[in-house]
Image (spheres, helix red, strand yellow):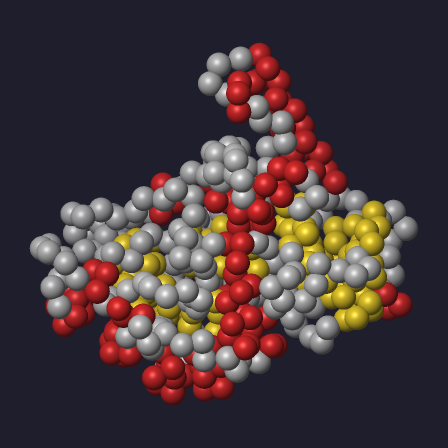
Length: 437
């Protein structure tokens, strides 16, 4: 037990030192920088301090502070950390089989930060993610936006709304996932009817709150599920909607139009069939592109051309892992497949960075390398769309959270014995053998 306490004290000291280290500037020089917000910089410098980007530009145009730690980026590519709009890592468990509509569920109440999935995430270059409940319900609960900081509890990772509450969206789904025995719907029409009924209740609940005007005697009895949907109606929470077939996509667009909620379409296997309709509705899409056969019948018409078709129609496009559908270490591959099928290179890189950041209301903080933004970036061995390229380092708010040269980090990048064991993420001296003593 004594050794266990000492290891935790050492880990705590390491975290404190890392926080202090942010006070001193760090400068990467000589790298090829892909800022996303502008043209590539062939020989560039990136300066960061106190968790933020201070400067970025060509080597001969950026003044490096005299007290900066210099890191050699020669032969390497630096770009913003990837943003995953749809993941299920963390050993989560959300809504249950008691009802098809459960907007009161908060997925962060079930996330285990000791889950090794988070180590795979940073090994893949992902620095921000949206963890969601599953899609087996029409309304399966509130999602959570996480920054992959060093963490001891889930609270250490959360992005937060201005009032301090955990920041996230609302997960919804249609199609066959939520069609099963009672109390779940058995048809697509009944699915839509149940959702409309719930949003009408939310509208009425919100109206009662407005009429009460702060008078506790007039306030309606609190309903946690309706509280969440009022946040959707007020535009605070984005709806992340699992949908595949073109008819299901159109149902989502009708619901969003009727109840005026913001929505991101997820998966959209048949989005290419109704690209003009999606564009006209000004609704963004987060795509799944898998390169192996199988999966659900609803996805039979998935094509790699979808990204390019949507892009040319004027739709904002992102890619996501839906981890484990795609391992978090392989998110780059989706963008590469889309480019092979006709999407622009520029569009594909935006679909990994700034576009998904904007879909979760974080475009002002992350997604590009610009002064004032969070110092979230990755260091690559080569072209991000090459199958041969590896993530060398992942940095979050100016702290290195993955280093492929570190044997433990490399284990989580390539797999092997121990890679699936639970642990304290990023805690340097945690001794698994002593933890239970």
